[in-house]
Length: 241
Ligand SMILES: C[S@@+](CC[C@H](N)C(=O)[O-])C[C@H]1O[C@@H](n2cnc3c(N)ncnc32)[C@H](O)[C@@H]1O
Image 1 (tube, helix red, strand yellow):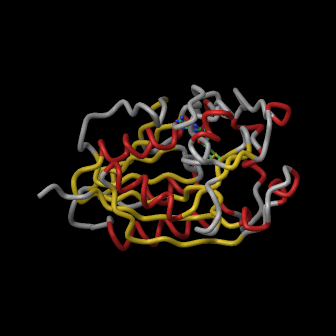
Image 2 (tube, rainbow, N blue to C red):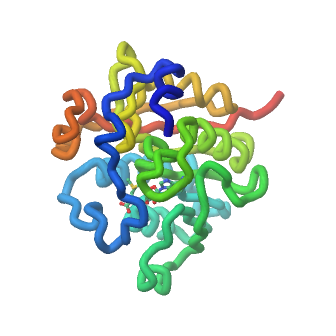
């Protein structure tokens, strides 16, 4: 990712090359996420995703095709629990072999920036804590400063008109702040910025929630207190007239 490019786009860049986190090829078993506390931002996202999924997507009498991008296995197992759901999970990293062998849903390795699926092939997309990372290379994907915008465009493309995106997007800042990136750890969004980017690709945000959670890693990289809030959105693919 190019700091100059991000600055030109009006982003506030907190980190530098010296703070580069080389987490490429992190084996899943060694990931810090495997030792997560009882209530952290992933857990909050599971509650949010399941409640919005039940409200807008789940219908026991209608088959629904769901694409998940990079969320935790706990979340995906919960979403997949209903008989009417057919779940496909995509991640740029491969899951550990043992998990792959036991998965009750389809796993596809690929990038959110170029989804290997046809247009309008899913009724819903779920994604927890991926948008803020896409294109930062931390998880070994291709470096791309506007990877998140590409991901939103791709989600809009694979959703049916009227289909839903339910996502925990990452750390969220007040609308008065500029969108910020802690190079190359993650981006921090505002709901205002997300509304604009979603609208530009044909997604209308219909719900936003902010969760305040303890995240000590944020303090270590000098992030502001606001960065300890995580944002969730539900958006609907606009139906063309
Ligand atoms: C912070 S983690 C999210 C939760 C994590 N999967 C877990 O199990 O707890 C970010 C996830 O996004 C995935 N990811 C990052 N960049 C990606 C990309 N370009 N396309 C697809 N997945 C990506 C990573 O491999 C990682 O699994």
